[in-house]
Length: 224
Image (cartoon, rainbow, N blue to C red; front, side):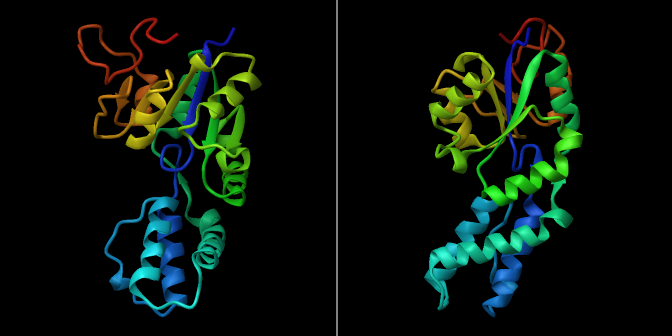
């Protein structure tokens, strides 16, 4: 019998889309005749790209609405996804580790549906995900308890049997308040997270019992 459901965030946790969005925003800027050197903020994901795109409306005269620019940005990202998207270090090993520990494994994306479908098509064989979800198609956010109720119900389990593996501090803080266990994948430890790891590779390790920290997850019988 499965212990629970390991829910992996897709973008920036399982899949590195930084190159996709950097290329997309660069292409958009080029189309708008805005020099790429004007871009000073880092771009790691869609949220960063959209934030920078919005700044175009504030600081440059562009003949497009927010919606029109968002559509253009998404099209550029779709065009570059197959070439530029890559798995994060330890993604395959992390998913395998959770399966081996008796968890169902699901992935959640909060990007546009077309991009999440491309991700599924490109990486499904390598990642061996039991089920893929898109928050936008479900009409929920990663911080919404209904998302975890939907996922848990699909597997015949309770919401408290879910564990979220994500790299976002705001998401981790919000989801922790729902009573769902959380794993933060980051070099920076987050107090609200149940467990902090710096790499998905660590999901396959067991901590030495003398290490008095939650940074290493899988001591004996630690979860559920």
